[in-house]
Amino acid sequence: MDVSTETLRKSFREMPDNQLVKRWRDQSFTEDALPIAKAEIEARGLDVSTAAIDRVREEEREQDQAIRRRQVGYAKEIGLSFLVRSGLVGAGILILLGIVLSLFR
Image (cartoon, rainbow, N blue to C red; front, side, top):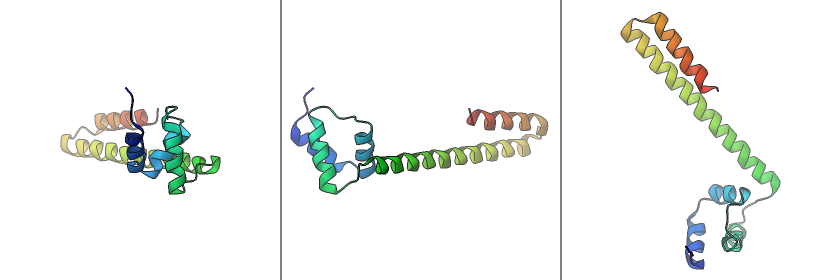
């Protein structure tokens, strides 16, 4: 399916900076879209140098770690709630341990 130049411009114009930089980093533009994306990046004054892309990767890694910590926290809360409500302390600890360990695989 052919996408018009204007459609590409509009799409890139509406795209958040971080998404546009990620797509540039991943080289996920068609041959037709590449110069349009480059023009949008330049118009915004976005830095797509190797150092800037490395910073984006580090931010993504930190966000992933924060999500993982929240997931572990939720798993612990659920497990502890289960233990208290059911009275199955021994079994609950094993279940909780299994959940937490599976999150780190």
